Image 1: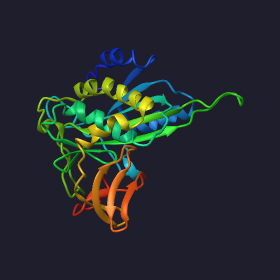
Image 2 (image 1 turned 180 degrees about the horizontal axis):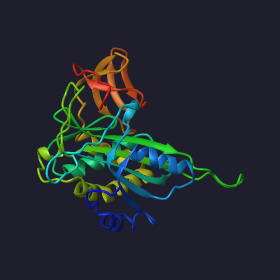
Image 3 (image 1 turned 90 degrees about the vertical axis):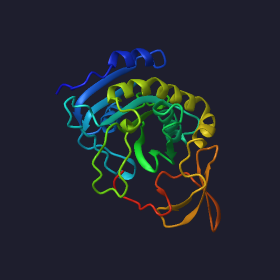
Amino acid sequence: MNTTAAWFEDRIAAAVAPLLPGFGVEAVAEIDSTNTELMRRARAGRIEPVLLVAERQTAGRGRLGRAWQSAQQSDEKKAAASLTFSLGLPLAPRDWTGLSLAVGVSVAESLDPSGAAKVALKWPNDLWVNDRKLAGILIETAMPHAGRADAPAPPRYLVIGIGINIGPREADGMRTPPAWLRQWRPDATAPEVLAELAAPLVRSVQAFEAQSFAPFAERFAARDALRGREVQLSDGSVGLCEGVAWGGELQVRTADGLQLISSDEVSVRPRGMAFRGRP
């Protein structure tokens, strides 16, 4: 099934290949999930660096098993109302903690370089505008087959899935309607946004591999959506968010003292915002 848009595959590959030799770009009209597909490939031993973009996902996934469905905007240009893609590459950082935050920083700075649109980062993996979700990030890793028994273990294969609302989306089941990029960039298209994001994202991931989260800490703090706000955790506890530590942990001061939260199994919302089952 052919894609309906030109995805600038050659342009993206030319920008990223000097950073990732052997890098390729694939665009498909429909798939179950770009993350699922790259994880399947990795488990089968295919660990080449690749960016896979889909115009439509039938079984897209977000964090904690939530659904992320791509959407089509029914206008005369058939412009995609969302951008859904996954970046896969082998990676061996010293510490994986904070990777989703570093990815969020990279995406936010590409979408809103001046900060005028007030794209904020909500720990650990969302981009918000005025407390409305603009984008989500799902990070997964696979351990490829080592080959010979005496061979050293290969690096993990990292898959970064990103979904961005380009145009307005249905808000059924959501207490708060999502944000979308065309609210401040009315002419934005999914292919153009992907071309803007790809090379900076790869550079950010490589910087994280070399230096962990520390180089991103202050940049995250500048866009932190939760800092200084009373938050509620999914276990019901409440506290004041004191930002993100240099290791990427969320700092929440509760009645029991300062808590450092690093588990991606914990959900956090500003107090008064309901937890919901769909991102």
